[in-house]
Length: 436
Image 1 (spheres, helix red, strand yellow):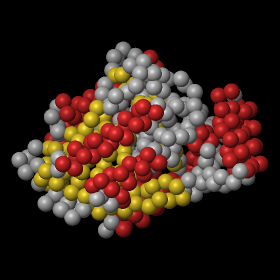
Image 2: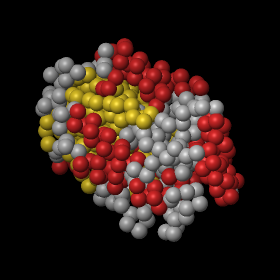
Image 3: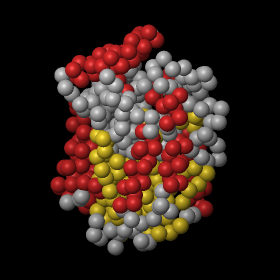
Image 4: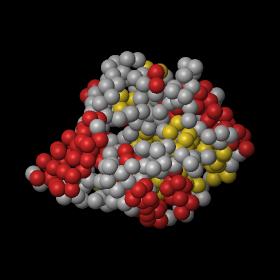
């Protein structure tokens, strides 16, 4: 018998806590909150194995926090660590959730960090003891009536995520306990005049609508691949809107409802399997001299980019004292029956994500980005080669490839190797095979 339990708690956002998103040294100290922030837990139990997903309305998850809390949950509830996942919505208007790094991009608020940890254990307990029978899952995919995003890297082709992937977990009485939905658009509706206000953005607003319209008792949002996809409707684009995230959420949920009404495949075999591996991701291990040249290039651009040069200076000092600046990230696949969930610890691009799902051996693949950690961007090889150094210029005028490829100094790590995106996909597909 398959069972599913849920727990949720509203998060308190400290007044004047710095919000994380929109670049370095933005000084976005929260003056107030628009909408609710949640921490949620979902406990999936097939009778032999249990998996747990922790969801949070934040921009990212943190590698060290995910590992720390995974151990606590695994120990408390006898769940194998490979079966515990952490996901975030990628709202750019939430307090930072990380232990260290990202100098200038939202100083972590100590009270919020502890509040989150306590909330994780609280909702995990609720989910564990809330487990009840699920008769079947219904799974499908529905198209968007109109684009909700724009491709900021390739404006000419403007390829975006055109579908919502969804899965309903239904009780024997026919009611929907959990509605999982998956789509890729950046959580940046709260820009312009809403720049400093804390918000769970369109992903959180969509979850609220799902509950209001009684589509499910509890929603679960997985952010799809959207490293290059900005929200189309933001406070800057629709200044007359008083709640920009809700504007996008209403369009999104209207299409989701059409998809749910059309129906999907019912699945009764909901056997759980999972695989996870801590992977040392490929990098271009630059010499001190090469890093110094990058620093000089950043300083030649402007004062803002000179801050990246300051981070490189710190990297050089760390290298000289013998520190290892390569990094480990946790790659994970969770399978529930015909559904495969690929958890990516960073931002993946829309076409690369579509390719990953097409290569999957699962009937219903889902990709959840910014999960289990924060590896920042994993750009495709074409983009990595298009912007080989900090002074690379985009002839098309997008100006974003430079940022996505060369944001490495903020985390004191080397630049990724050109094949980073394909490396991530190959590793996840390798893990998927282990769940079969």
